[in-house]
Image (cartoon, rainbow, N blue to C red; front, side, top):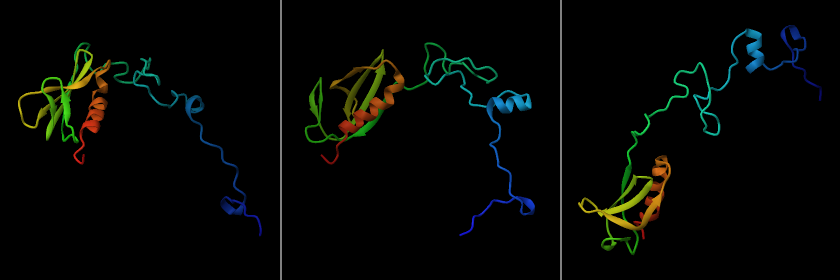
Length: 151
C-alpha cells in the first residue's frame, strides 16, 4: 500500500500544526492577563486564597454566627424485624418518622410513630459533628441503616 500524506490547499503538503498559545504565552502575545481558572477566594485545599478581579472573591456566604441551612432532616422509615431501640420507651416498630437533628456540635437521631406528637431518642443515636455541612451525609446513613421495609 502507498503512503498517504495530508495535503493543504493546491495539493501541497500541509505544514505541521502547533497548538494555540494558552495561559501566560497567550497573555504575553496579546498583552492581556493570562486565561485560567479562577479560585473565587479558595485554593485547592479549601484555604482562603487571594484572587483579585473576581467579583465576590474571598467573601463568606453567611455572616459570622448565622446559618441559613436547616438543622434537621426527616424521613419516613419502616424498620426491619426488631424495630428501633429508643432510650425512653424501648423498641418501636411500624411506620416511623426519623429525625436527624444538629445542635451545639452534636447530631441526635430521634423517631416518632408516623404522624404522632412524641419523639424518642434512638439508643446510641448521638454523635459529635464538627461541621454541620455533614448533616445530610449522617442523615442518609441513618436512613439507609434503619429503613428495612423488606425485613
